Length: 250
Length: 304
Image: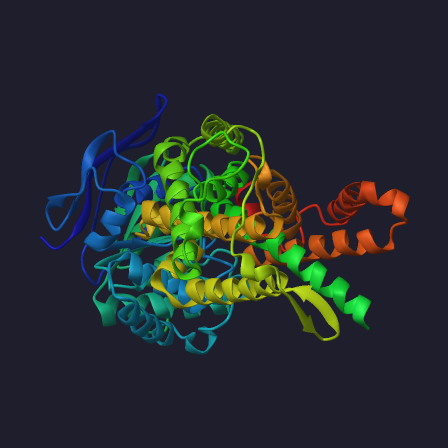
């Protein structure tokens, strides 16, 4: 049981149900996509999985153990990392410091944090940008910094919250290749929230579709593409269009 | 040549005081979004910590008689200690309060410190002789300046270099820079919030103590209100510098010192009494054209 899973997770905000009975499992090395229309509860689910929000009902299990009551940094130390919409970097700090402070926060010595940060920046392909101020970077590089920061300490699971937002097709394809490497080379389980359905269909091993806080469909990309319920949720009842798939180079 | 250099040294030494004060305020604002109005009273407290409690006009010196190599660490420790104590006893309870509430709490703390001193020492200013050797004049670049003025400038430069190195090169400095920019995110990443905040208070208190030593030696008096004027200018410097920006606070501190000194020289004698009005006028102009301050800290903008 080396999985990360949500077990019948429900969340209510002042009587409004943001999530109701959501089940989801990510295995090591697996890429799971989480899609759904705006307001479906995707980010709320990521918040529950990472300790930012507690579940009203249900539990989050890491390798069979419940994570309830852990604070975000404790969840991070347990091996579940995340990125945020818009990056949320320390924009006044150099790129390397963004990663280093994460390593230090995880309990590493400063020297170890610097060494890992340098290695990680090379690994995500922005080694030469280490000394640049994070807030001055182009958008796509900022995303790589955010991913590099999340990978510090080699987490077992990585939750990416809309990493491709605002990217061109070419940039999204490069990002897809990086995410694939995270899963295959690091053996890290990835949960990908993304509005770019093409990217999700092309990249993920398994896809979960949320609508109004509930899972309406779950399965491999082909099954999701063929699903009437998914089309309906996305396009309304009259939808009869083919969902695009973004090809990813392995 | 000489008068110009004289003005330059005057400006630098006055600016040093404001810069040290502004740094003390900006450090805490950076990590807590708290404008600590008790900072001026911490300065006064550090001076009075060198005296025995008494209501007499003549001060009975206690630690003030220590040789400089003991006097300086003692005063810095008093400042840092009082500042950390104020965080533990007062401000920690207001962590989640809005900035206005925290600011009012800092006013209240300032009053408590001031009236504590009033109770022990009375409101009468006392004459003290602190580090008397420093009033010797020295000749430098054609200007004749008190040794203390030169030391003030050098100490400020050393503090700035030391603080920069500390923030850049130490683990604690790294955590503090991250926390100053986005405290919530730093916490999420496992940065130890309480340690960072206590460190900021300790540094800020030590800076207040440095000002106390300089002011005490410069004026030769201990007065329970002595921190207030520096505090006001330092606060203004923090605002002009861009709240929370350490570099901005220092630059604005020196700029205010320069403006005040230059006004003193160029204003006609009758108008000199209104020097501060002209300085504040300049401040208003800066804020009209750059309301975010000279160097706005990014974290501040994002939070609004």
